[in-house]
Length: 145
Image (tube, rainbow, N blue to C red):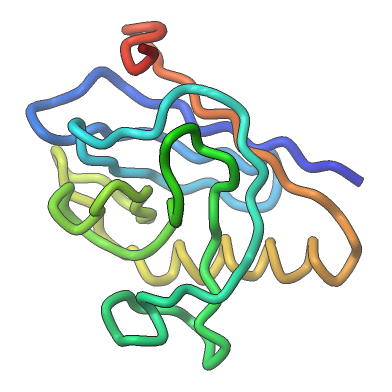
């Protein structure tokens, strides 16, 4: 089975872009990206793979396997993850996850990462494929070249 998730972003607020990740039934959480390195709009396969940064202790991962969600085939980029963080400076070009948003800050990030990682573990176990479509609301196509 193929699962289609949606990441809907609001217009940038300074260096931050707040959005909502909708897994269409599994979990919904807020997202945060840094404006200067935002993911281009598009559809990307999401896989659960070992993060080298997590194994080195640079990122938090919920399991001893150091696996975090990876967006595959982002044009001109690699290693784009979904991970824990609270402010745009925590992202390094990745997508931060959180349960609450306060202005341009996320909170309860780790529980949100756990929920998304658990969904991807279940998808792997069931042989399912997950895609996320990244779209910008209120300013369509603002990240396209």
